[in-house]
Image 1 (spheres, each protein chain N blue to C red):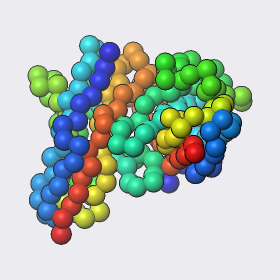
Image 2 (cartoon, rainbow over the protein chains, first blue to last red):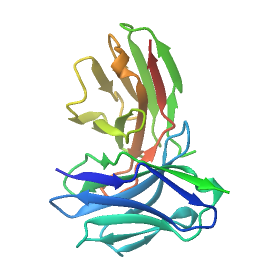
Image 3 (cartoon, each protein chain N blue to C red):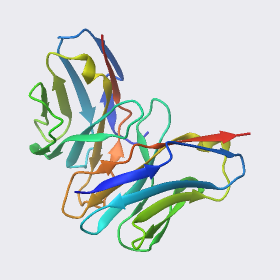
Image 4 (cartoon, rainbow over the protein chains, first blue to last red):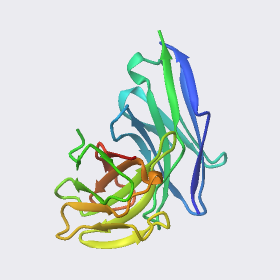
Length: 113
Length: 114
């Protein structure tokens, strides 16, 4: 069965600092991996996804993530945090033979001025 | 706005009452999903439709829960005899098809059971 672990339920960075949100996955077959962002009282919005093409994936709002098979990781990064990046971030995994998408518990990002 | 709408946005009900939520997906999307999200957790898969056929149900979906998508367009999720443990955000998502395709999420319906 596939699963996702997000290390760190809360991450706090200063405005302008590097953002690094960690995600490790478990899947017995090649996975599709996703990062979503959720603002308060809203649904989830896709930031980026990995679908077995390029291992470095660029998304919206300056975010990117790198698929590392050897480390079973898909960490999300952004070079310079902005106040508007404060939100909850979810990593998700789905395998090519399964409709069930599994989400991590989420990481709440706080950006300090 | 992703194009997926959900109604109502908020529902407060008393324990034991029945509630029904509606999801309107993006019109050309034939796949529709329901998820439940509790505080501090990620969304958990409940059920999935391809057109009008309900193809998968999670073990989380007890007998008190039923979902329909009668014409392959909008979907409803009904919870009978609500319990306090049903309090959560119920999210709907849709996509065109293909497991690599993006799921577009609605804003959710927040259910509070008193």
